[in-house]
Length: 79
Image (cartoon, rainbow, N blue to C red):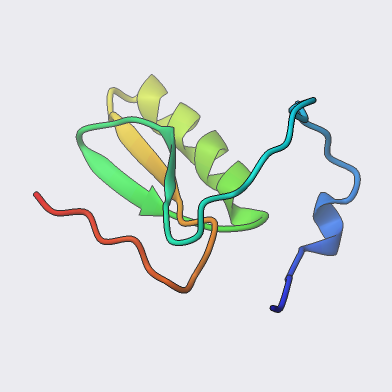
């Protein structure tokens, strides 16, 4: 296994579950739902994408942000 992390994320904080938590491999997480455009980003770019989605929302554009979380296996979403 290879674990890759962005060192500029070291200073960030978030909620940490108290119970055991397992990240499902190959399952993306929709960080923000939207219907007009989709941004797929991982690692530090998720934060930038969420900020961009906020700015787009101010202009009336509903932006979805998806974090694949793992790059292999790849999540496929069928329409």
